Amino acid sequence: MLSKIKKCPLCKSRKYEFFSKLKKNLYSEILSKIVKIEEEKLLNKIENKICKNCGLVFKNYWFNDETLEKIYKIHIPIHPRGRDFKSKLFSKSGFKREYQDLLKAKKNNNIELFQKHSRTIKSIIFSIPKYKKLKSTKWITKKLSRSFDPILNLELLKRNFSDILKLIDKPEEFKRFSGYESYSLWTNLLSKVKVKTYGEIGCPRWGLLEIAKKDKKKIVFIEKNEKNFWGAKCIFGNKSCILLKEEKVSFKKIKFEENCSEKIDLVGIFQYLDHVRNPLQFLNKIIKISKNQAFIVDKFKDFDNTVYIQHFTGWSKKSFSWVAKKFKKKLINNFDKFKKTENQLFLIV
Ligand SMILES: [Zn+2]
Image 1 (cartoon, protein in one colour):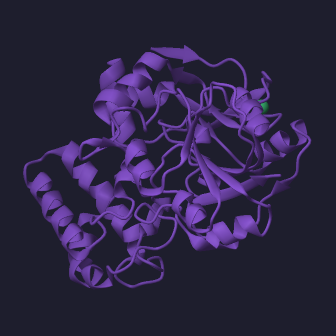
Image 2: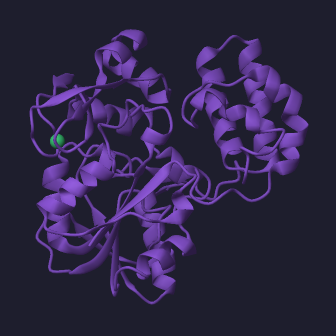
């Protein structure tokens, strides 16, 4: 179920060292059940390594396709952040409901449910603009806590609940409830590259496809056969997430694995690369079918240095510099609006 990774999945170097331990989250709970290894043991067996050559952080063991397929087909078929994008969960009533469910789980001593609601409550609070500076919310960031770990101080939550409720209005950009559908991001990209055709790969719901269409660009969606979300089981109501978006904005669909005649000026690859099993092969192909690539990746180094269990790799400026050099391209990495978020933008041109 797990294979040992003996060389860096990007530059293929065998020179790497220990980087960090893993931490618990929803995926470690589920994966431990699938592979039938106690969660603690699993979190001790899998470690983050860092490549001394290209700086990529990667797991020393990784799940085979069969195991990954089980997660994405059976256990978590719907992409949580895709589902939450523009959802009503970020609302006064959504927050109230989560809080009540959290108290109920606490009362019933249901640890899994308690952790689930803790995470949701945290991501709601993390989406309140300037939450780090507000009296009723700033306590949440102590101990470098992140939106997807379950660490939550229930007493402080209780004490501040009614004040937090008053703060819930519009979610902050680039967080769980607002995704990447952002004019400031789009304008920033257009200031750096010329775009006639814009493409995207990964979650079809939360990116720039609609904005690009409104801006009279030709849009394409790239489907890749990989064990991940956005498969046939990523369904909202009775339609797949891809079909739903297609009905809304109508785009051309192309298959990553097939030869394609479409020349894409810019492709958005948002929170996707860290799921890919063979990033070098992926980059080879995506750079062939598109002129420029915009990557959004998790900024783990500014937080707790943990690349969580669901992500095979962790990306930094050093790794993207390696990519730019390898493909004889330029790297741009200066999107100010991402400075205080969990995201980083890397543009390969
Ligand atoms: Zn490497």
